[in-house]
Length: 86
Image (cartoon, rainbow, N blue to C red; front, side, top):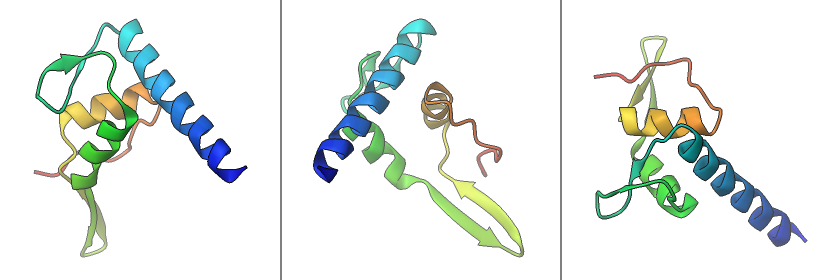
C-alpha cells in the first residue's frame, strides 16, 4: 500500500511539472543537455542532489541553486525564499 502511494505521488509530481512547463512554454535540460518539456522526475531528483543548505554564522545559504533548478521549483509551486549563493 505504501509503495502504491509513493508511485502515485511520484506520478502526480511528474505530471504537474510537465504541465507547468508546457503551459509556460518552458524547457529544462535533460541528461544529454538537450531542452525538453517532458523530463522524468528521476532526472529532476538527480539534478537536485548537488544542492546544499549551509548554515554559517547564523545565516543560511543554499549552494548550487541554478536558474534551471529555480525554474523547476517554480513549476512545482515551490518558490524558495532564499536566492542562490555565489
